[in-house]
Image (cartoon, rainbow, N blue to C red; front, side, top):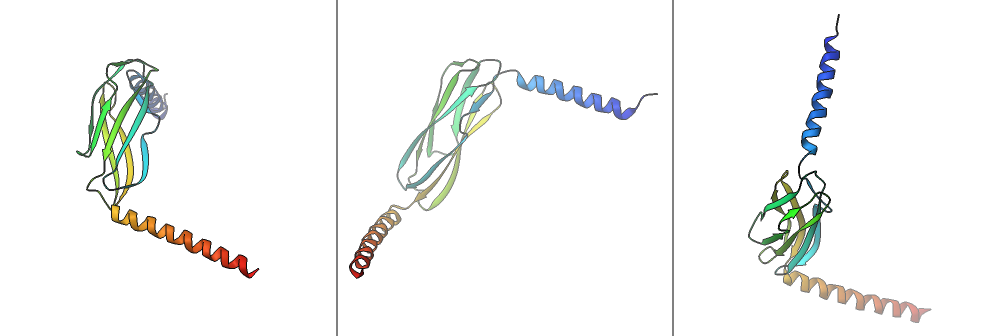
Length: 156
């Protein structure tokens, strides 16, 4: 007599093995950093970043298209064949004009001969006026701190 549970378990293991073999074949790009943090920038600034990747698959990869989520981001990418083990890049230029006062997460969708990938970046864009106020405040705090230290030294 056979145990139905054992047959079911063997079928699951064999299916998982073949699914893994099918997925492991072909081109697969893996980003060194898939989400970059641009930090805090002023409204109107431009940020440039390179997302480097490696083809960890078994076949050559070709980037067919890299398109941004909006018109504020302009990507370019490695052209031609990217052999297994070779590196390529997605070059991203982000224009922050009009995004003052916002925390953003943007992405570039990378269409290639393997599974679709995303190169994401996050950024906090502050208004220029706020940036100037912040810089003036920091200067005032430095002057105040120096005065306080001087008074403390004079008392001793």
